[in-house]
Image (cartoon, rainbow, N blue to C red; front, side, top):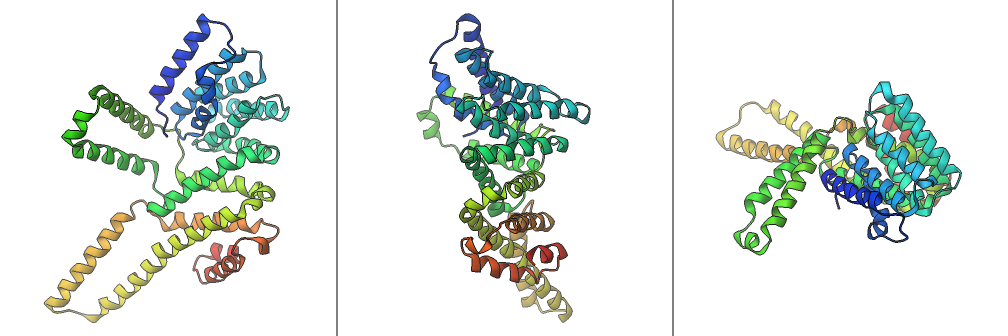
Length: 363
């Protein structure tokens, strides 16, 4: 369920050593997991993407050699991942991404290689260098037009992942998520019972803990990874540009939108009302001791609520809402949407929002 750079690197060394010693083989165990390994190409971590691309390239070389279009594309993926992500190298990176798109358009890739391309492009969208987003988005949109059944499950998973962040604590930036993961890991170590320790192999426990710690160390120290708000905007931009196809999946998107809208209202509308009530109470003057005690209880309540909303920003939630509204505005047949009347009612309710951009998009 998660890829550790150290694990992938060890697998690369293993496959490459077999490649150097032996010849081409028609069947090897790792080849069966080609598609599963491809998912790691969409990781926000550069180290994970690099090792996954190297591993897939080694598998391709082992099974078919270096004279295939699949090997050429995977080699370009490795090149993009190995190149330092900065403005000076942006031209080289963009050209490599465009070459991948050109080779893909020629329809020379095997089905497994074709499925790996969208995952790699999504991984590029998670990098911090914005100049790479446009070519990656263009190739991904082209792929959606010709291989929508392959691309949509990936887009659906990514949208679902962003939605999960809204359900929890809204937009949590990368370093806050890493801090939370580290805290949870330390807590699990402390709470682990003696019975569990005795039942599990100590070597297995040690290896697992080392892999997790290395994974978290790489994750927290990756300066090339963009933040989630920027990726959210880029991902929704891809959906907008592929709207003729995405509209066919409106049932899923409408459910996500209504779920997000409920979270949005609960987190902000109720909070705004409580803040206005607090301002009115402030004009009542001094209260007696009993009132002071009640006020302390309310303060404790709001403090606990604020702690549960660490990382939440109203500005970012508004931006996410705008992304949904922009996407739905591109749909050609709004009456065919699931729960169309409920969606229309939500637009009307958003007209009361103070933010002009939200009002305009709702109209």
